[in-house]
Length: 493
Image 1 (cartoon, helix red, strand yellow):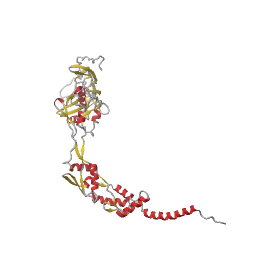
Image 2 (cartoon, one colour):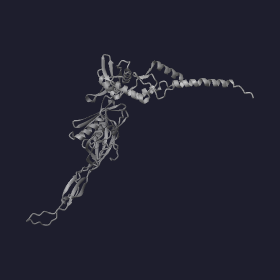
Image 3 (cartoon, helix red, strand yellow):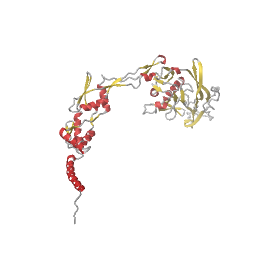
Image 4 (cartoon, rainbow, N blue to C red):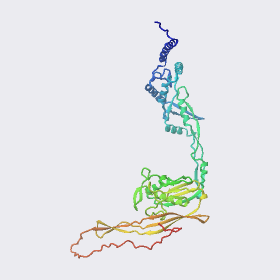
């Protein structure tokens, strides 16, 4: 039998295998450093990291970090200079980033690229770049404290109120500050051993939050409306609450067409928000509650808005008349329940200023005096509702005794309108609100307790009927107040 000689293709394949296997073996030996170990020749800050695994490398970096925190850096700008420690900036090495970079050396890319990289490291070594993180708050505060002589804060443009409510714009000013991002990069570079440990500061301009041009474009030049109410400054908790709520509206800018919600601006009336306990109206009674006095702010604002000829969107009256404004001109608020809202119905901004002190609160509304009008607010009592007298038996009072538990007060129905004049002539008249104030009944406690008579010795008593003296009805009704129909006809509510 003849045996067929192997073909040329078989011979070539065998030759390739014979050549590649030894090369692969050599390559494995050359590239085969354990994946979790750092290549020899890799160093950081003059410290050799070669042969270390990740955990060992992190430990080594922690030792380096401890020394670096005590390192001094010189900051310089022209003739000014200052020295600080890295630790003052909340400096930390980004150890994870450094170790991750170290472990990648010689282990990425094609075999040829890896081979060249490894040969270069063996010959020249590889110094890893520093990676650091800083405590942003510490860094900013420390640098601001050091550089106060060479930096300046920007100044926002602001409205200045002059005589007669005239408004002018105080101009804005640019400031100068340190480029903190570049500073961090420069400091990180300066901590390398071969670098001079000095950083030249880069200063950048700081723009104001509100510029002169922005305020001038709002066209606020004068007073549109103002109102003042008074309170007892000796009621310290109530006065404090008025101040807190009043400050919420001070320097408030309202855009054209914007609807302002009192509750949104002031926020919840709670002890957490800084409010104190003072009298509030609940179920036609004055009781202690958190935030008492806030309604005086909403009422003052309501009247200022009316006089500024702005649009009322939402308003509610109290359940009983209040003392600091005429009937029909109050505005009660309860967070998440009753709100006071108004709209800036002009084509320009309005600017609100509030003042609280000396037993009074004043709210001024400024804007473009093109919209300034003479305004009268007229409130009419359309009906008076007499209170009733309620008698309640009290078994703890001696029979025939009467004690007033609660004084009564009449209720009212009122109608409020706004009359707008231009150049001395009536321009418009519009109904603003109908208010209902419930009467508060007078409550008298009548004693029912039987008390045995005390007889003095030697004095004879005779039986007789005792008159308890109880009146037969409530107070005499006064003359009726005729209803006043609102303009345009219709019956008042």
